[in-house]
Amino acid sequence: MTAHDAVRAYWDAAEARDWKTFGGLLAADVVYQGPQTRERVCGREAYVRFNVEGFPGAWHVKIERIVGEADQAVSWIEFTGESGTQPGICFFRLDAAGRISEITDFWPDPYDLPESRAHLVDRY
Amino acid sequence: MTAHDAVRAYWDAAEARDWKTFGGLLAADVVYQGPQTRERVCGREAYVRFNVEGFPGAWHVKIERIVGEADQAVSWIEFTGESGTQPGICFFRLDAAGRISEITDFWPDPYDLPESRAHLVDRY
Image 1 (cartoon, each protein chain N blue to C red):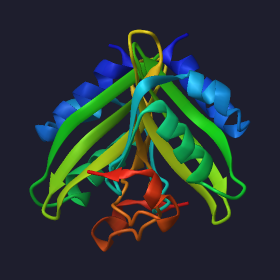
Image 2: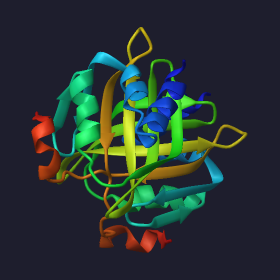
Image 3: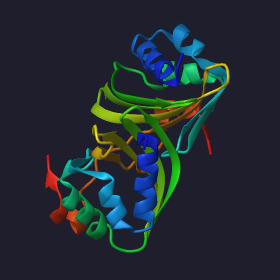
């Protein structure tokens, strides 16, 4: 399985709440990091629990893009939860056995366009 | 040149303020989008100007990761400007001539860890 395919399977399993398949894609020593909050989760069991319990309520993910190269891949998803839809970006690294061993997760929020470049852009 | 190499050259040229090389990597009809502000810049000339004039002051970029596949690539950079260092993530698409034709740019800011998952993570 390529890194691209592993990441597609990861999101398909998450969307299906198929935590057995989801866990099977992860290395036992997987490390998840969220640089924006400086949060970290270590190990497969803790990371599955983080996904099951950390995001209560109804949510759905739609894959916008996956780009994979060698042992790495990146996904851009659109996450829809109770507070609306927002983009999420994850960088993945796989170990030698093809299991996901590193996840770095970014959630970019809307912000105001700086005045300094407002004359250089259009809005959509 | 692969998409991975084109994106490395893009950031090297930006860091060097080599706007001639930078422009040469872009398709004439390049489209830049920033989904967080809903800003858009269309065309090579406007996009070079956006980079030259839109980000005054001293800044530096350090490539953290580039992942490329076929006509697409993603970069994760650390951008250091007057207000500190922050991650930036760009999704790129190349046209049939190998020039960068689409750029989607994300700037994730720090945010507070939600209480709902605080018991499921460590901090770093």
